[in-house]
Length: 335
Image (cartoon, rainbow, N blue to C red; front, side, top):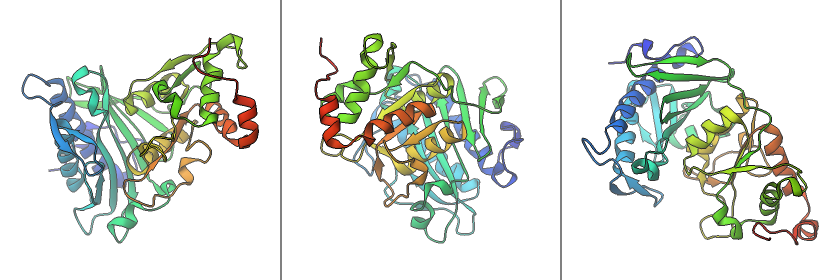
């Protein structure tokens, strides 16, 4: 039975998508309740094998995938593509939508009580499962994420700005708290895993070096570095406080094309960022110009305040020879 649309205010949701969004919201409420009881009823952070891409799965990954698969079935989804599934699952041949989802992002943080989440995007269903997702990512008709933290919040967009909803745990429904979320244009924060510094390409090292140099460096201001290792938490902070997130390609095997997945993670986050007045690129080119070639394709990913994303791209635009000359004397840990 489809849940009452009252679980989610529908003013900003296109009529055709209201049933699906009600199902996603209901599944999120159920998942939030289960996360809150981790360690009491079950060990949600316990190992549960590996997913189709070889990443370690936790018990909660499997639980979340099943919850959202059933929500998609009830919500009018024909093709369901999950980070936890090797292939697209065909649910209802006559249904109008295709749903790409990372059911549980940041599962390595389950037992540390750090915010985790669900990321999703919606497309019109195509004739074949592959065609529903191996297409220009700008063809998304909706995208969003749910963050399970001190508050459970749903952030989504359907192409007319970004809305923020917060779960009222007593009433068991989401409440609209912001109708037009905007990424702050100014911030002194950047997010990157600095332990990978030695593997980065020169433009990324140079950008981080200039931030770390602070008031004595070319940026002439001090910056703070953040790294939560939970994509939804990073996105949520940047939507609230601005700044930039970097997960670049690097020289390690398996990281040559970045690590985050275009279909399940980068495409929906890019959609949200652009709708909120921010930017999202692979370092040089906008993510919304990309087209997925494979279901689990990875990509470098930089997103955040528009000017910050553009500055990172500018570092990549410098020719290789000039980059070496310009950045050769810089180093993140030089005294």
